[in-house]
Length: 398
Ligand SMILES: *Cc1c(COP(=O)(O)O)cnc(C)c1O
Image (tube, rainbow, N blue to C red; front, side, top):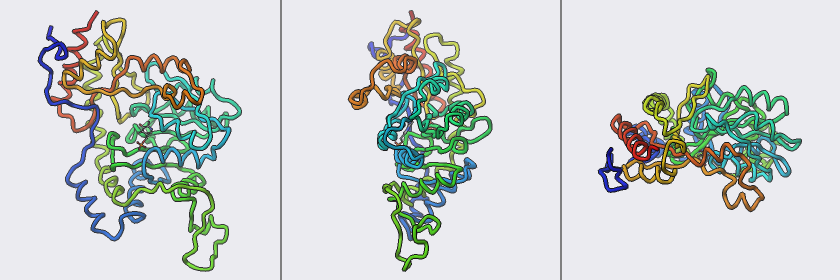
């Protein structure tokens, strides 16, 4: 048996590899330079082109580009008309923004538990948590695998709830033949550099509903409009007149970022193909390795995975998650943990949330780590990850 690097052995690799990384080519750089040579740096045609790239890809009717994925969630909650006293059901296994968006509007996030095999929000648990105050579900496509949208749709229709899909992980994913972005009432994307396509910082909300669309547009630009259909006085005294008809924010995406987003969207299918290839290799390598669990694939899904998560099997290993994680880092494989359950954070504790709310999510959290998954990985990078995990698992095998 090989001595682990953390015990003084030779590491699998010396140049460390992280869990995610963007892919920027010369044509992306050229696309940004083109914007800078043009007449506009914000509020111009590149923003419109970015929104069109998103509706073209997904088949959704409307897209509003915004400054980041958190702003996208905030706008969706505002467009849903959610406020003081309302409840929004979401998952604890997510980035804090999925829950924070409800708090921004004075509503209370309510955490439903997750499925123990896919780690996505469990529709049965959503139903258990519905009260007369519930107004929406923010369902997260965790790691890029789609939530069970048919079931969630039924539940939302039955209880008159708005279905918001936090698709920060899942651009490029299809569920039962339909693109994520064209499934829920509103779908939010993030274009942060660790996500599948990036424009530095950026986000978008997609919808097929004109009423939501109008509200999203207002929410991301101060509640100000020049649209005569929305104005109180549609024949104003001069061309300078605009009206503020609601309270919004400045969450606009710039043309500079939009130029990069348009360029990146052209590569989405190539990124997806490579991510899927790596996921297949990992699945193949780990399927018979009893020391770790891997996520079960969601039936009916063609997933563009953002993360690949392994979970240690305590029955088969003589180590903690921390020891496994540190041993991998010493081998040159730097993992991350997605995610600490949101309600563990001190801020949520101060709002009265306590451990124990979602036992399945809590148990999953104890054993998980995200291993490298990004399209720029070479085959030998992938082999190194597999080799290092095999080496650590063998060393700590019971
Ligand atoms: C990244 C992420 C967000 C927030 O996106 P930003 O663009 O970083 O604001 C929201 N939800 C999930 C699940 C995310 O992973």
